[in-house]
Image (tube, rainbow, N blue to C red; front, side, top):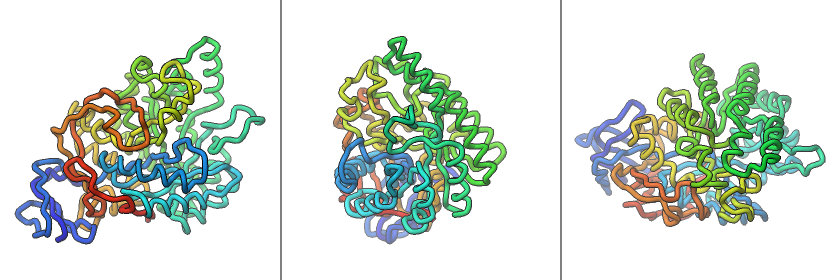
Length: 470
């Protein structure tokens, strides 16, 4: 074999085994006991580290709030952000591709494909954001010719406040467009899937106006304008439409306890309603103005203790099925929009920096080590289910013969403090600055290529591939 890993705690679909993994031509050929491990040209001693599938971050934004030709933007963000990803044990990412409602999406997808194959450290696939009639007409071409099988809808969220306002790059859609889009997804068949960002923007405007009139500019005001029931309201409508059409649905960045309850209901009846949360919802609350201020502005909003604990329970009991990071390649200047870190909630930009790098150690530290979830839970929501939801299983998301050799060795004893030097991407800010984390990627392999070795990057840009769900 080309490579073997021995003496590991291998996290498989069926639990943790002690043993090893062999690799040939970028594929896993054996998972089992060390005594049966085939000979290999190179052998890595895992030293009792966890061996897990590479994390799949299926919620990533790489535009970074920048203006200019798309290929220039991606040429500056894909290398830096995917380099950071290998430090975080992320080997595959799903990136959102959007365009102005009056412009086609396909050329921008082509740019993502070309720059990925040229400059990415990890594998990448695309989701597209649908906002108009033009985009509905593009859907069959996007799927069959460009390999984009997942379609995101800002469901009532993020729409212009008045008809006179300039049309946003990705404005919200209403029931009618979502219904027609899901019908097209149904007709396309597997692996096509709809994605929804669920917030009722009309009610949010009312609550925001009241908070602004009261002089509120703090992080908690952002959450008070976006209570959990606002998220749940649109989740419920999207769920009912998807069931009527008869298609699977994926709800992005669930932040509220009400959302967890709806996902639990759907899973009890066996409906394929995938529910995603993000690490910041598991660790932070809206009462952290002093600690993170406007850096904590994200849609949907970070909420409160009851929501945070409900999300952890949802991961443990299977109600929350997936995770992503909502990674945004913002600099601090882009994030703050000239308003500073504190009392700047209305002017700052929504998004979280450095997500692909801190995700794994956050899950290890505040999930596994804290006893809230198990390492098997981590693999299920960060690897296995992400691959299943987006048509990449069993190629990705699992350690089994025939799968891509996307493997991370986690040293559970490696402890660091998150500082600016922790990150390798564009973001020069983080809501985790000063936090101690324990459990880091020691090795990261992408299709059998060693990209991170003994905590240091050794891979080269262009090692990644643009991949197509099946």
